[in-house]
Image (cartoon, rainbow, N blue to C red):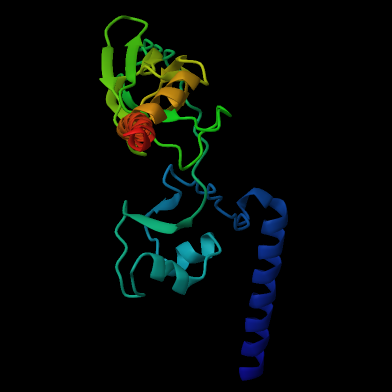
Length: 274
């Protein structure tokens, strides 16, 4: 009885298997479809370079890391999360960083060029001029260090616009006569030497005064021959006068002695006759 029961069970299982096989072959459309992979779009970096993913239903940290092939620990680290942090649907999580997405700029109106402003005019400046009228003793028209200034020479300075007109007389010594704070521009400098001197250089000179510049000019003059002859006679006039007086006295004394000698001779001739 038991042996027959096992045969009946085996026969039923075989019949069930055969029926299943035949049913699968006859109705292929009823078979279970194969598993399909759900594609996920490749995330695109935002303008700031961050790659953001929005949490979907049934998402987990492990599932997101597996989908985007990211190390789970790295994913948790960039989001400051742990494995126990709960993901809420719709929440944005950071997958990483990439270059900013390409943005095609929208062409706007061309900017209006700013009007050109006039170039500011520089403020006028001033400079200084120093003039030395020196005694050119050797007449070479070149001033040596020991050739001092001539006293009494007149210096005249005028500009081309007739706004500056200055006159100064020189004094002795080695220092030049200086004019400060002269407005920049074109100037003419002329010199008049005192009596008894002949110029050894040109006495007129044109020049430009630049802002902040210091200009030096030298004019030479030499004592003329008449002055050199007159000066010694004037300097020794007292001695010559004394010599003239002494000579006159000697002359008178000589004449007196001559007269006295003549009288004495006549007197001696008369004595024997008496």
